[in-house]
Length: 88
Image 1 (cartoon, helix red, strand yellow):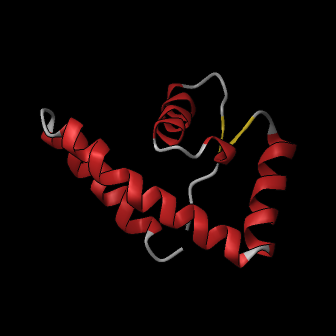
Image 2 (image 1 turned 90 degrees about the horizontal axis):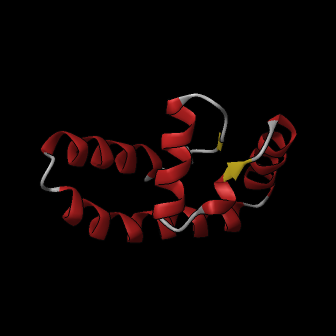
């Protein structure tokens, strides 16, 4: 499952949006509910797009984890997020 988020006014959604951008996947950040639906439908309808996006996230994660090693809890969270997207 790939993460798609709406960048809203809550810290959780802004944090997720920031992480997706840092991982080089700004296309997974929607500006509103319709954009969220559009992104999810596109990922469901286009398996190659979904696979390419998942591969990019997996490739971008190790450098981010290396930077996050100063905060082991954050690094563990990022690794868990990567594992959950690995099957995408």
